[in-house]
Image 1: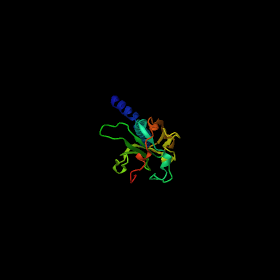
Image 2: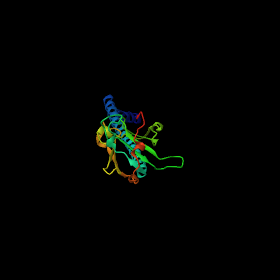
Image 3: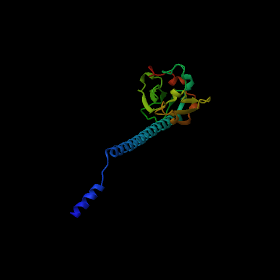
Image 4: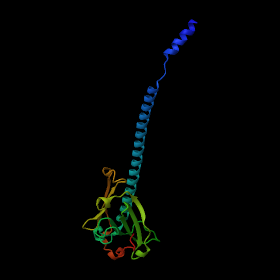
Length: 213
């Protein structure tokens, strides 16, 4: 009997949680879970955004390398300022189109050609080529980079020096310019054509493909 009364006293001393305490504990747990989920979501979003920025920057750097390769063997560098009236997105705009006559990476079956780069109104860098004096045989546009926001920022992408030998390239890259303008990065280069002093006739690539876009 004495043992039974002792057991009853111990059971009475081991009180559980009241309903109010349980509700408070659940509220705290919910708050902690919300903070954890929000933090995790923010971290994941930051990682995704960083991956996108790295991918776009890599695209632009590869595009600059490609332009450099063609410019180095370029015989004629056409001044982007003279493209006023040719720009399909703004007749008065200059600095968003660049074309050359180049002999880069030619094979026995491939003649020298005209090449054109264009920053379009969808923040893309496009590229196409065509045989000299035959713009009707131009290739389709190829998207070589995205997130190029030069037009939105009113920043020319191409500038030719007065001597007509060196093209300055500056691509402003941002996948989310509206929400993160401070994240804009600039990829710049000065590219010189080695063969521009040979006096090739400008008519070789003077006529652009029609339609341009």
